[in-house]
Image: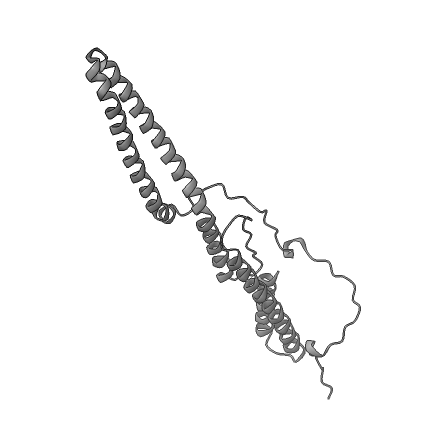
Length: 211
């Protein structure tokens, strides 16, 4: 009675084999690298982290405008006492100066708030990107890779995520080889065809995760 022996993949020697044609549907899909256009990817978190510094700047601007108003009025009062007929024109000039100061302060505050939100995007945008990649890895997609902009924070964390994904991808590849070996062994030994099919399906699923 002859028995069919299946070679263990770990004991195989390297032999020159012709390159296999990979079907298009099995090839990994290269997703284009996109530049984030939204600066408020986490509106609540970004606004909360920026609110304190914006509030401090706004308070300082209020004190500055009050000080300027008192300075203008104190400089105009002696002139109005010496020339009462100029009182109305001096008051109009002071109101105009104060209006310009308030408008300038408002523009400065809006610009500062915009810059602060853009700056917070370096952290919150990177965190949003990382969370999306981790969700894909958790769903079994190990072919993902995190790409951050050069100015983003959390660069080291992104590298660690990429290393974890690469490790899982290599583990899935080895599992696929083991499952393929088990499926071939089961088929050669006359095992239940349903079991062989199940093993082949699992091997293909592992291949897809590693591709």
